[in-house]
Amino acid sequence: MFENFLCQSRSFIPQMNCFFLLLIQKQNMSFYYVKALHIIFIVTWFAGLFYIVRLFIYQTEAHEKPEPERSILIKQFKIMQKRLWYGITWPSAVLSLIFGPWLLFMNISFYLTQPWMLLKLFFVGLLLVYQFKCHIIFNEQKRDVYKWSSFKLRLWNEAATVILVAVVFLVVLKSSHSFLWGMLGLIAFSAALVFAIQVYKKQRLKKEKAAEEATNTDQKT
Image (cartoon, rainbow, N blue to C red; front, side, top):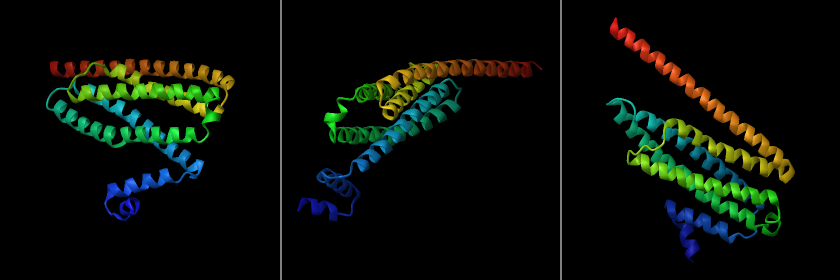
């Protein structure tokens, strides 16, 4: 009776409740449907994490600009952060953590004996720590508190990339021996990222210094 009432309702929320209720009741739902949904929400979760830190960087840099440019930019970045964080990133994280364990429990006796799965769960734990730390930064910037420089935030932005690379290697290779080589590649990849960020920072400071000197020269003439 209650399930029929939910499904017959035309409003959005009851229809969503009906959708998830039917998913739970279908115990014979295909493994591949759950896997597809898990992958979709993992992709949107990482997309949200990548972009939210970029917005942290933009807002931190906007804080150093003169008025009225600073106020205009910060106001816009706060709106963008709120919509991204609560509209995409958190919902994707929650749904990933629903479909992921669902997938795991479909064959839990097998998965928990696989070293690659245990390592993957470790990196998922790191990803959750990353998510909550981003939430702390989000709340700080909402209050106009800037504890991280734009350079540190750029380094922080690459941490999610490192986790993504590790998880993909594990899921695709499914081998601890192959994962060892993958980790060596991950370390090399991380070192390359840090080097690229350092080069970018130096080039940017050089351009800013050149622009400042050109402005001072124009003012003197």
